[in-house]
Image 1: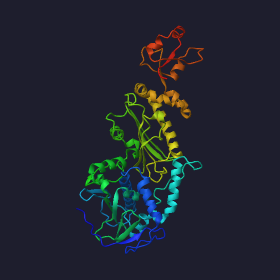
Image 2: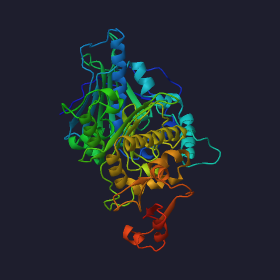
Image 3: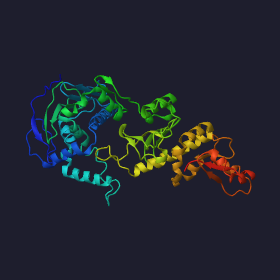
Image 4: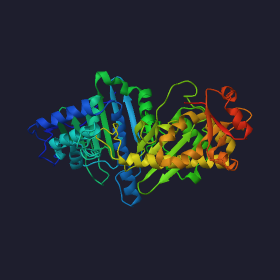
Length: 482
């Protein structure tokens, strides 16, 4: 049973004109814009309540990173022996979720500035930028492609997502500055908050006590919380402990130097992100520093779900920013004809809109797609050159999808060198020939590449027009698909 032993507190209204925290507190006039703003954040911006856990964990990770940096710089921090970690504790009886970190913490002024940032940044200005963001997402005429983005971090939006699930939040924090006093911030998300002094025994870092609404009691279910952590925050670079047990994997493999990653590590990671029981056919581990920075780890599976009768799929790449999953099913990082490729892409430079999850299809993503497409096609070409048997297996598995790339004019030369055909030179339908091989063996005087279309090899072999080509020993490509 959790109890609150904090001292009495007085109410402070969130005001756009006040920026100084006073732990003694006083009541001030309530601003109507604030209530409207919080209502939008809580009910309209986010599509899933689960993301509030992601947002609070991301904030905790940022605080831990700052503490680690100051320690590495030789500074003396309060409670210097504390391990850098994030904790989640559940109380099912009272419907309370507690999220803690041993990070940099906050002073009373910092709590008022950071947690009350929405008010102090100007509610009206925020609402105007949010409106522009929505217009640009819907393709409003006259809006630039990047309008309204980069709102994250400027208004303290992420923290307030907690009120989708909370009826009250009690935040307690103590700064890492030696001898700094702790502070308690309490709010029900209705437009007012209170500040008070924290108990002397409060350690460095931040403790967020989330009193859940009745309809949000799934957030004290340990299995549900574990699934949220492993979906969104699995690669946060600090231990995340749920009721004392670490539930995240802290190694983001795509950030590791390729020369230091073993094949078994690549295979294990593939199974983690793809939910496939087989090892991948091949992988591409790539890092780009200019003209933009991003890292990627992409895989080609051994089998195609479409070939197994599961219908046409979509591009599905996991998109990360600062190790946090932003889009688990991004459809813009690769062209549609490479939709069989699975994996992760991360860039810390990507602009995010206010909710993070409705990520915009902007110029930077287009550049990432162009670079990854070229790198993948080059990887396939190298496979064809170095290991013909494995490439032929790859082609037999994915050729129906890959052939859709005929319209990718920017990569025409790469694409045509990947194509393989069964032809009249082969004894059965397993034989494959490239366009380059076809041209190299053309008899003198042949000016064109000949082909026949039909449903099966057997049907094409019976085509009477083929007799003339056999007589002159001209190879004919067999095309079986529309």
